[in-house]
Image (cartoon, rainbow, N blue to C red; front, side, top):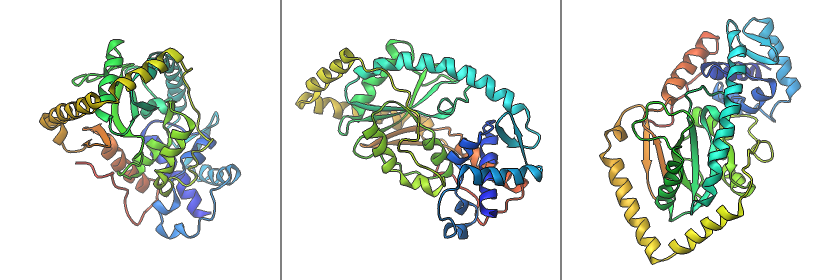
Length: 331
């Protein structure tokens, strides 16, 4: 199964850039679709491969000395140090998760907040000591900017919000992406975003929102062959606090009014004006979005660099694709 073998190798190449060796299960979970490498493979793929299918192809890659297996992890030849690094980062991540969940439980009191997903290196337990907490927040439609204000205030009260000019912000919340609950689809499609969203970890999001989000982003399956979100992902749920939940309800009752509508308009105007005036908004190599349904702050995205390294990595391993992967439309 040549297409499957190439996909496995491409997946290992991708995560090698992140210094992240993969388990057999993770290779299946993040397996790059063969059609990304060979468009003709689209029609030949009938169903996602089994773990035994993947194991068989990995054995072939190992025999060809393109992949190495060590302690249950798979990585490119010559990268034996990754296993030790992963073990160290998993210990760091475990401690950071405790801090993250302890602080994030207070967000349940934020009016109009419908869900929080943790992304980035934390989502795959691959963070460093200086790492922050990348957050995708889901707000109620029509109150996006109000929700953003209260969420920022809540994090600031505990000194846990990453500020505008922080170059590094260990254990701080970086609210770099907001969407509304009625429009959870992501327009900017790419291999990078597909892999990122496939690893999101919900902490303040119920099953309904979880399934709604991934139902609106079925395009991920065009990049990841075995992508199956429902019932396959680990929730790091925060224990519900009735007092905090009631606080959020009271807040919404107050702002579900003419005053609340007026406040949303004012906050939208003020926040968008600040975004427009910020020179970082227009820098190349990133993306900043501000609309009624989405706020995205990735002015200096790692995506472009990763995609370029991935394309070069494919060539080094002998995978010659018809077309190179592209970013999601960065500035």
